[in-house]
Image (cartoon, rainbow, N blue to C red; front, side):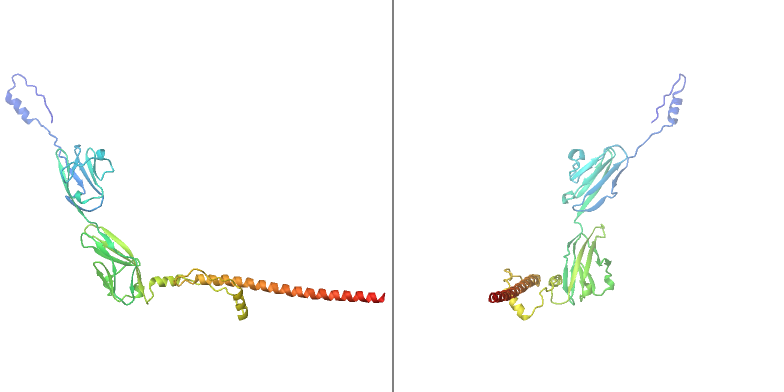
Amino acid sequence: MKIFVVDVRPGVPMTTFIAAILFIPVSFQVVHATMTLTPSVTETTRDLGENILIICETEAPDSPHWFGPDGSQIPSDAEVGLSARVFAAEQTTSSRLFVNLAEEGDEGVYACRTDTEEATLQLILQLPLRIESAPSPQQTRAGSDYKIVCQVMSPTTPTFTWYYRGDVIDIDAISRYTLTADGLMITNVMTSDAGPYTCEALNPDTGDSDFKDIVFNVIEDDTTPQLALDNQGSSPLPSATPTLSSDVTSSRTAALPNMTSTETEEDTGDTSGDNTSMVVGGALAGTVILMAVIVSLYIVYRKTAKRREGRSRGRIHTANGADTREK
């Protein structure tokens, strides 16, 4: 507002003075403060357990404050600290409301207020979308009908997308596939249906989603996949037993110590223990045979040496006798 000082001189009529006042231009500056919320809605739906942030801003430096559903003022971070679950970070022209790990009791209408303004927002909390049950692996026999289970908890009806080996499955294009509320139904399962699947659920209202990877096995015969895997994993050692004649084998067996294991092996299809015993037995048998050959050669050598020694002594004795007779 502008203030003017008017000099009223003597002799000037009062009507002239009043007219002058009426026609003096006067300007007034009116401030219209506006308050905004982010998100800029009057109602928002969030998930239980979610961290929520609502921002209140005003043009006037009026220090806005947040009030909870029960009408009480939300404490500031200066009072309770940043580690509190619910608090407000207040500044001169703004205030940020933090609701961490939202609980059911946090639901309701929140108000941001100054001395002259107020803005409200209603917070609605719901259970988040999540996949509750999607076991992996799942399996069935070839030729049977089977549903790959994928059970979802969602506040609204979710939409599903199924993937096979990373590619989207066109449910409408494959007559053997049927989409259900809790899984993917496969009619007349074939071995080619085995492999990695992915179940993806989406809440179209909030954009919340979840997914699970599922391994699907198909059995072709009576052998369970686990037993078949065990049989593939066992690789018997090659036999290291030397080829011997029946006589040598029986004599070797009689001379060998008892190498039978004192532990009883379980019938698991693993023959590595028996093969190891055969390798050790073969090595010991070869050692025994080699020692027997060496001993035999030594005995023959000793006998031959004695015979030669006896012959040499006989010649010397005969020569000595002839010398005696000549004398």
